[in-house]
Length: 75
Image 1 (cartoon, helix red, strand yellow):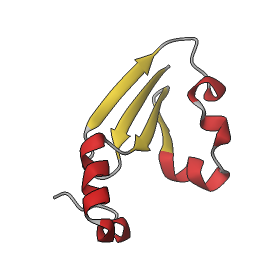
Image 2 (cartoon, one colour; image 1 turned 120 degrees about the horizontal axis):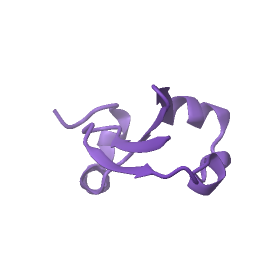
Image 3 (tube, helix red, strand yellow; image 1 turned 45 degrees about the vertical axis):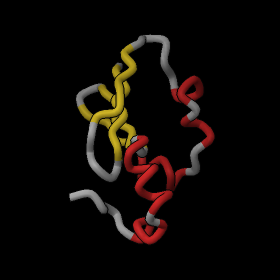
Image 4 (spheres, one colour; image 1 turned 90 degrees about the vertical axis):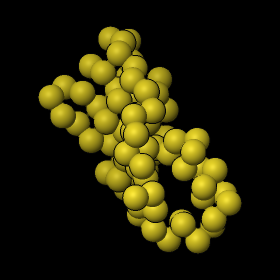
């Protein structure tokens, strides 16, 4: 099972963890609420896809707090 991290705003791939030893607890996913899991995690063909935020988008949000109102602010 591979775990793929993607930025929820710009859709860039942040990284991948491909280890048979990974589980939800080691990844910290057990700390998410049910709603956060629905919004952030998807499963396809035995892989886990997690939406997070990349450093570039985080910096943009810090400089432009109004962007928090938008689902996607980078075109």
